[in-house]
Image (tube, helix red, strand yellow):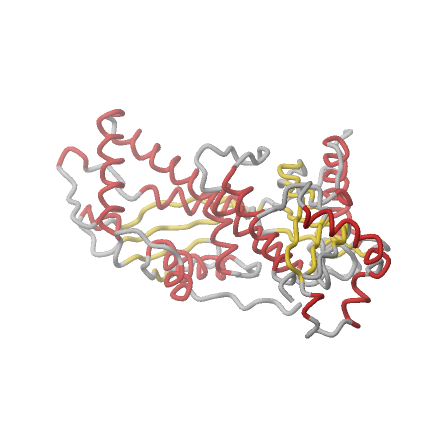
Length: 213
Length: 186
């Protein structure tokens, strides 16, 4: 499935990379201009390593390494789950953009928990249930709080669509693979392999859905 | 994003994976029998069943909320209605009804006509004090605890003891909203 590093095909690709690299500096823009029927520009494969680097190889042999995102599809930088007392019980980053070391992720979680609680008091409208969306220059933060107080939030690129659905889906995965695990202690950090596997599939599915176009 | 409409109990029940009812009844029966053998005292068994139900309830509530999309209930009446119509339907496949509201609106009865836990069961004479379905009272208590309602759930009528239906009395003791500890220095 993957060509070994020294195969002739890959060497050729590397040579072509220099010229096609320039052409593909702004992948999203180029994609729109390309003729969709141009078969040489068809994507042959896309290798996504665990650090979020995407290596794309086109039919004509050119490749491009893109560390940011898949065309047109929002990238998720990281996912957090906080228990009702504000402790971080799950943290996953997707790509180096969202990566944080353990202490920082714990700090972000407690910070968010407090801000969420304070926002309920600050709100001019009564019955406020907390912050749902935080928009900044370089990221968006979508938060979903269940009626039991568990918060699920995702840091993603600005303008990402359907994050609320993703969060609801993560909530369902949590109820299935975490809560139904009899050995999982409530409010403790999540160490459930099935949850990890299914979560990765869910997130990958969202990203891969757009690669085929 | 427009709020998603809550799904009816029937719709969810049709979509979840289900297990053979007899397996369920037999498993529950085995649990109760084993508890009786281990603990010997009927009162102890009642307490254990309630505790087991509580542990189930605290986990079940999230699944219920995730799958049924119910929004926050405005009062206790809505809560018990949702438990009877959606909750029982979703998890046990039976519909319950809510009756006997008291003047405050804090106490009511949930009536179950049919109950998959007790198919084929007859209580022997030496277990007359046993609340066979006490796990259900624990489940309701645990689930409501996680959505900040302290309740007391007791059995009023029990088919295994000679009545015609199962009747659970659910009494709201108090709301305990999550409060951010602003004054934790004092």
